[in-house]
Image (cartoon, rainbow, N blue to C red; front, side):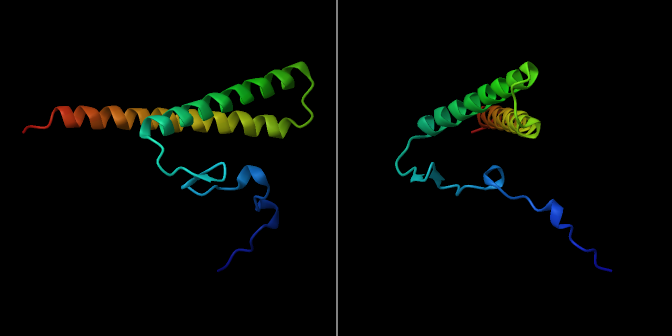
Length: 103
């Protein structure tokens, strides 16, 4: 039994595009250090959080034109924070495993 695909579920637009993992803003990372990449990722997370906060404020003030874009911005920021938290937890667990390794 095959189910028909609902065309209204197709995700289109810039919000749903996935960038190449080797490119950041259209440029190759090349010789970028781990610390630089980490600080850039944290800065991107902070920017997303600020954008979500601004969008929420505009929705509360009644100046937002598209409530769905506000919800998407807040959800994107929430998912980014959850991902960062999980990465931090895994890094701390890995560090703990390394330091407890018997030599």
